[in-house]
Image (cartoon, rainbow, N blue to C red; front, side, top):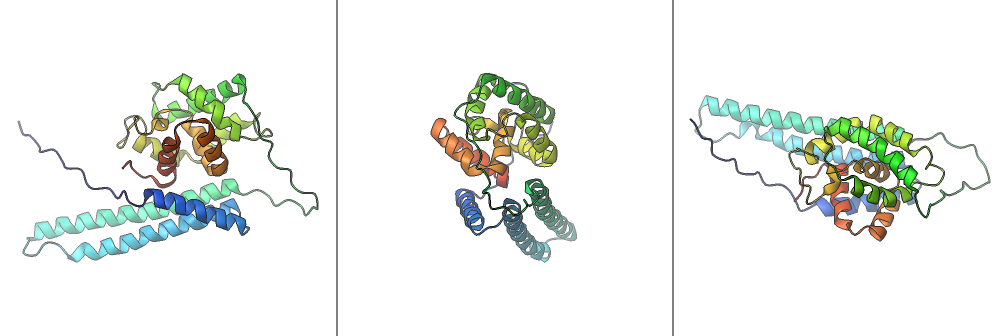
Length: 262
């Protein structure tokens, strides 16, 4: 019986995770203040990310002729195939980044209102969310989460506790139809959600429930939707009422950048 030595883990870049998150938030704020729409901001940031990946792909391709000296044809062929596989993967990541951004931007766009001197009313905040609303949204979230992961071992009491807080950053005007809004969001972003749970969810390659329990909970779908819609409102409500600021930060990085835990 043959025994294969345990593979050593490859090093992960863990230097720029927090810096990137803060930089994107700052750029989003500045572009928003300058009058850019959320859809335009999202698309611009995605284009910058895709360009960075494309630049990395160009450097990887240059490695195709740098196989170890004095190695045979078989080693050279294996080296070339490895470089080719990595370059193809990077190209896929760049394309996917732009495609997902376009899909998200399309969902964020709304018809321009007719010119009017009457200011648009601000969203109505809610002081508390009733049990019936929490249960309705949780039922929708559970159905989606189980369909994506097949996992039913989540903590329902924890889900209710978190949703009681997170749903406060859904405006009073949107509360009644929010379960349907969540379902539409999950349908539009199914690929992104599959990537998220495939990496960090139950059984995922980077799953670590102790560091970021949200990836194992159905209410994470609501967090994803709110992160794409009202990220600063979500952060304010979460940090005020939940003693888990680092959990939201880690989950945000997983959702936005696909960053593995450091």
